[in-house]
Length: 340
Image 1 (cartoon, rainbow, N blue to C red):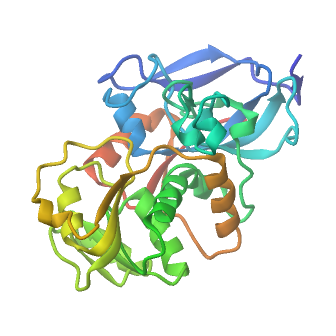
Image 2 (image 1 turned 90 degrees about the vertical axis):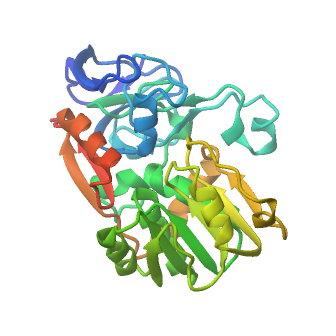
Image 3 (image 1 turned 60 degrees about the vertical axis):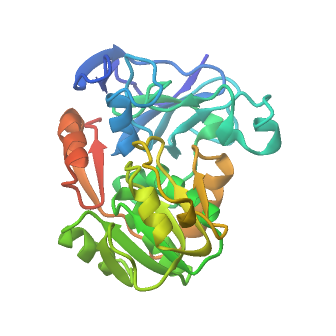
């Protein structure tokens, strides 16, 4: 029987996607009980990620109906059998990678991000657009105390995927970030703190976004169609726009690398082979590993990194998603359930 603390609410509420292309709707459910190795978490904040839009639009695999959200911060309210190292009341972060099989060739070679039978929070298992969520305890993270719940939420995907992308970019000094949203505004600070020169690329005419990038330490900010004043060692693409790939290639030095960090991207248009030649590379980022989370949170625990957020009530999830889709956000949107 699950170990529980306090008097639990008789039920929970969630914002649910019934089918691709339909708006989220508020639903009431019985409070779930954690199974073996699982936690019941009372959600205090959940970030709104572009991947949630892809789930809403049917562009990534998901099991419908589904509660989206994979940047979850909350407190443990019940422990399933066999959970170790986590106590009732602990604050935990729940990321996109919700479970792996542990037996496929990828899991056995430290590449669990490529697992053949994974579960993804907010896509193939219910996520955090809710007052409560169930999570596999092994895939939850302890979070640095210096971040509030709302501040910590974007770190669970925008931060983690950005961190993995930066590591795949290599040790180059000049780093370009294409699409300056939730992930890039976190990663820019990390890269600057590492002593790198960061160049920000935004939509044409987005002076607000460019000024925001410069305020975070970027040495240059301009349109994605522009060439930077110096050739880049690596370019990281966060916007789901395939046309950015050849643009980023043109901005690279010889031997440079383009890292596509999104889970979904529109088709990449054709481009001359000469723009790839001279040992330039194009890579993609798929999901994350638990080691990515451990190393990322250790790296930022005592850094001056800050997240810029805009909070929305849980029942305003559709509004937050539409603001993300339209590019009206500066930083990251975070849903804040009203729980007692």
